[in-house]
Amino acid sequence: MSVREQRTEYTDRALVLLEEYCKKLRKPEEQQLKKAIRKVMGIFKSSLFQKLCPDISKVFSYLQRKKE
Image 1 (cartoon, helix red, strand yellow):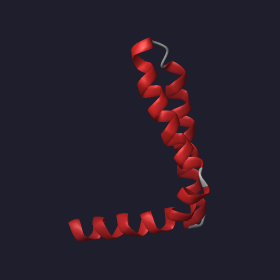
Image 2: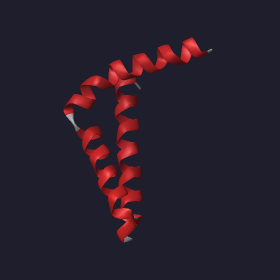
Image 3: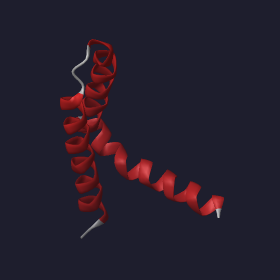
C-alpha cells in the first residue's frame, strides 16, 4: 500500500469514527461539540486538506525524528 493510499485510509477511518461519535451526541449541551466535530469532518473531506496531507505528513515525520 502506498503512503498516499494509507493516508486516505486513515482519513476515511477518522471520518467514520467521528461520524459514529456524532451520532451519540444527542443532549442539548453536546450540540456545540457536535457542530465543531462536523466542521472538522468538513475539513477532512476538503480537497485542500487532501492536497496538504503529504506536506503535513512530512512535517510530522520530521518532528518525530527531531524528537528522538
